[in-house]
Amino acid sequence: MKKIGFTIGKFAPLHRGHQYLIEKGIRETDEFYVVIYDTDVLDIPTEVRANWIKKIYPQVKILYAKNPPMQYGLDEERVKIQIDYLKNIVKGIPVTDFYSSEPYGKFVAKYLNVNNDLVDEKRIEVPISATNIRKDISKYKEYLDDVVYNDYKKYTI
Image (cartoon, rainbow, N blue to C red; front, side, top):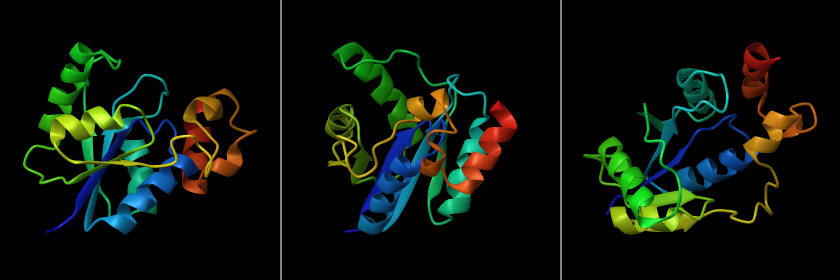
C-alpha cells in the first residue's frame, strides 16, 4: 500500500523546525503534501511562502488553504470546524499519515482516520518557533534557509 503523508501550517516563516518535519515526512512516505494556510500573522503572501517550500523541496505537492475558518482551539466544536475544512482540502487524496509537532495532530489523525506522526513535539531537535523568529529575525537567522531569509527581508524589513 502506498504511504501518503501530509502536514499543515502557515509557515510564517518556514524555518528549520518545519523543514525537519517535512524532511521526515518525505523520507517516510511515497508521496508528501504540504497544506499551506492563509494567515494574517505575517504580511507575506501565501504563494511566496509556498514557493519557499517548492524551491527547497520540489518533490512536495502543495495544497492551498484559502480563507480558512478562524475558529481555533481543541474543543470539539472548533476541532470539527477545522477538520471539515481540512477534509475538503485533501478530498480525493488517499492520505495515510499526518505529520505535525502540535497537539492538534491527534485530532486530525482521528477524524481523518490516518496515522498521527508526531515530530519533535518538545522542539528538542530544532528549538525554534516562527513566533520567536517574527519577534527578532536577526537573533534567529540561523533557523532560516537563505531563500526564506531573503524574501522575509524584502517583505518585512
